[in-house]
Every structure is written in C-alpha cells, then in structure tokens.
Length: 165
Image (cartoon, rainbow, N blue to C red; front, side, top):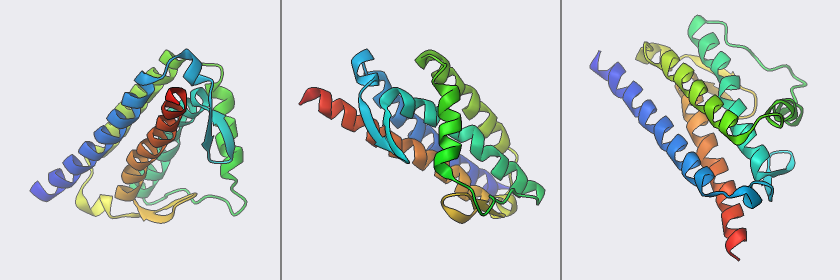
C-alpha cells in the first residue's frame, strides 16, 4: 500500500539523517580527539568509546523490532541496568579499530533496513517496550535508533569544540 511505503520511506530518511549526522562528526575527529573524554550515559567515555557504543547499539534494538512484529517482543527484566549493558558492549568495542566499528555500523544498518522493508503500517504500530524509553511501537524503535545517533553526534561535536578552544 502507498501509506505503508510512505511510512517506511519516512523512517529510512530519518535513519539516513541520523547516520549522516553521526558519521559527519566522526569523520572530523582526529586521533587526539578520539581519546578525549565525552560525557555519555553512565559516566565519562572517550570519543572512541562513544563511537563503539553507537556501533553496538542498533543491533541491540533489532530484537525489539523483530519480536514486536512476531508478537513476542522481549520485555526487559525488572533489574535491567543500562550501564551494565552498555559496559558489556564497550568491552567488545574497545578491541576494535575505528574502521572496524564503522563497518559494524554499516552492516548493522543494512540489517535494520532489511527488517524495515516488508513492514506494514499495522506492524509499525505494534507495541514494544524499550528498556530505557519505555513503551513505544515498532516504528518508535526505528525512531529511537535515528535519535540515538543524532544525540551522540551532538556529544562528539562537543569534543570538536573543545579541540578548537
């Protein structure tokens, strides 16, 4: 249906904008800037670690999309700790180079777009529970992915500003 495709196209555009914004800032960081501190969830990370966080985050949200569409969206446990979850991903990311993390971002986006491609308006409206944002919809998770990249692009821009000061 036309309405389904219009919604999917709007989400693809939002995802593309978030990614372009994030990668635009990442490309401006030099080696020294990558090791500068950046505030992020749970404390202070370096710019390099923040890139790693973003590289792993999208893949962590795809099960919410797939589960929501299948009618079995995962529900975070009551004791879910976002800082502990992020630290686990950061441990993996710290072993990777920036080019490897950027390749992971690209691969992850391709998987996300494959999930989006067949979805109908009804499926986009299905409920899911994001572990931090709370109740949302399948469409809401796509929006959170894009917002997350824009949010952390802003954090990285602060590193660039600090380098210029």
